[in-house]
Length: 168
Image 1 (cartoon, rainbow, N blue to C red):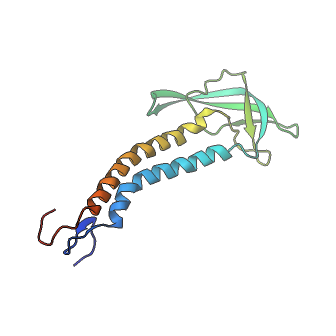
Image 2: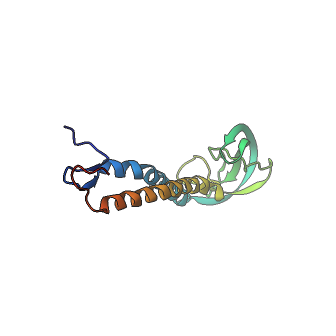
Image 3: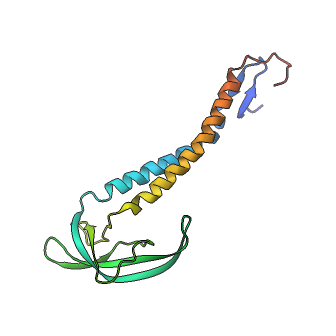
């Protein structure tokens, strides 16, 4: 006979809750909250080691997109021309697009760049916290039912043992 179970009442009346039940109850909230922590850490550390510069928007590309919060949107991907610390003039994009980046060509924005590479620039702003915030909200929203279910199961397990042959 297999010993795989979620919750059960043993033949002596004691109630048990397996690790499988706890895993099913808590896996989604833990994954969402873990992903929120990782993306928040990435958003927090992304500017580290980067140098601030003023970039001039030299090109603006438009992409049709969709957002769960906004629905159908137009995303914008600006390219910036800026001068590095060594005096070289460089053009680079952020490597991504966003619906709030509709900057007019010729406008100037504060950007961050990595002095050790010629890669994409980083646009500081609140948009880097949207994903961690959404994941944290989902984690908390799924943690509440998990907590309630956990309390119900713990209360069920703590009740007096059922006599053998009795129904739950």
